[in-house]
Amino acid sequence: METHDAAAERFDAIVVGAGFAGMYALHRLRGRGLKVRVFEAGDDVGGTWYWNRYPGARCDVESVEYQYGFSEEIVKGWSWTERYATQPEIMRYADYVAGQLDLRNDMQFNTRVTAAVYDEAAKRWTIETDQGDRVSAQFCIMATGCLSAAREPEIAGRGSFKGQTYHTGAWPHGGVDFSGQRVAVIGTGSSGVQSIPLIAEQAERLFVFQRTPNFSLPALNGPLDPAFARAAKESFMEDRKRVRTTDSCSMMPASEISALDVTEEERQRNFEHRWGKGGFAFVTSYKDVMNKLEANALASEFVRSKIRQVVKDPKIADLLAPTNHPIGTKRLCLDSHYYETYNRPHVTLVDISNAPIERITAEGLIVGGQEYKVDSIVFATGFDAMTGALLRIDIRGKSGLKLGDKWAAGPRTYLGLGVAGFPNLFMVTGPGSPSVLVNVIIAIEQHVDWIVDCIDHLSAKGLSVIEAQVEAEDRWVEHVNEKADGTLYPLANSWYVGANVPGKARVFMPYVGGFATYDRICARVVANGYEGFSLA
Ligand code: NAP
Image (cartoon, rainbow, N blue to C red):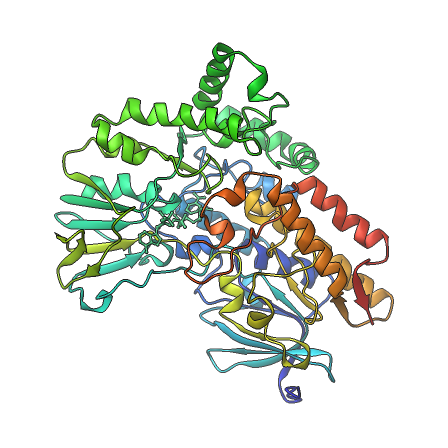
């Protein structure tokens, strides 16, 4: 396909997205002397954190771990204030890094990339934007994020609603005041679980429409003890090095004991201990929670019992206690006073597991023939995860092959980095890589470093093109599936398998084999001369 436009401005690399992946990619590529431009749809850096400004939005990876590790200077110059950083604090951090590295100079904001087309003759990508840009680049780096394509379900009558509607993933920058309002929240994933307690603080009446209850663990958030924060900063570089050698990529070591090898008393003590620490450490209480149903059932029941202790109305507690999936197989939530919210008299849980929302009317929503009149509707309905942001761009590789067509039966990648038929196109934390299953900033740094080393290698060898081989891609997809099948993850209807998007192929998208294992595989591929890739 001849698409190349000789008049288009030429770059060595185009980076799509100015979230943490795009920011680091720009920094590294520019450091190698490449001419780079970043296109970003928002009007500043921050990626998913730029858009997700809903009340209560905060990261559920501990703040002292949720930061770049590539520069000691950047680490030393920043201090977090809470155990789990709020969205505004993360935006301040992104701003701090962008300022330190002077990144904005090479970023073009308010610009959405609409197409990326490969020209086989010129061996270059032509990239187009909604602002009319048409540029040419040797490399195209998709730093588009895994949870950035917000999704509103199609519900009949959606256009007839007279009140305001919001999506948690595209929240108004000025915030929203729900005081005195009747509010509906649809969705009880992480965004719902975080926002519901805060919306309940303001709203006069709150209806939560729940299709599937999720397991949520207490965050036990609070201000960071300054002495702890200082010590964490002191040891950060060493800690990060160590964490990168683990599969879980977490500071909290996973247990090596089976939940089935201990007495009931011991197990309860351990569960209580982990529960009392707050955060995700609970699911690694035992080594087999995520791969053995019997072990998982014990952990699941422990959490259900906690929900029943908090929620006063036993019927509501039953509705909130998940029984249709093993704990952890849908992305776990961390909360601050989520379950307590249902004890408040003005908060109503509406179970829509058997009777979906029939219709949105001018004044509210109809479920089971009953109309719930509201002033605002909040869609906490999630994302077209992992592939959505990529496929919203018209990406065409060799012979005009559309990425959307290639991925019709689910994403196919080699290492989550490259795709056969799409030379010199790289994804950062793409499907088939650990991405959303680990601390994503660590995954981002590993991917960007790999990509930059690869570009260096091509240049040192006088080569200009790298492309994943079909056979290597096939083997990798098979390996990713095998790994997932060895766990309980595929049992749940989660966004990990695309179940939240009607018609999306059911494939477990991230690589569950562990970060360190994956990192070693990537290094081995390089050591074997970019095994599985064709270089030309
Ligand atoms: P989500 O986990 O996909 O949850 C979406 C919710 O909307 C689910 O309860 C879903 O029900 C419901 N829903 C979707 N379509 C519906 C429909 N047609 N009718 C009724 N209910 C519907 O999305 P999310 O809460 O935005 O979170 C997505 C991911 O982003 C998280 O899992 C996490 O990885 C990340 N995130 C992280 C943080 C953090 O770091 N703190 C915060 C927010 C989000 P079903 O379960 O039945 O599909």
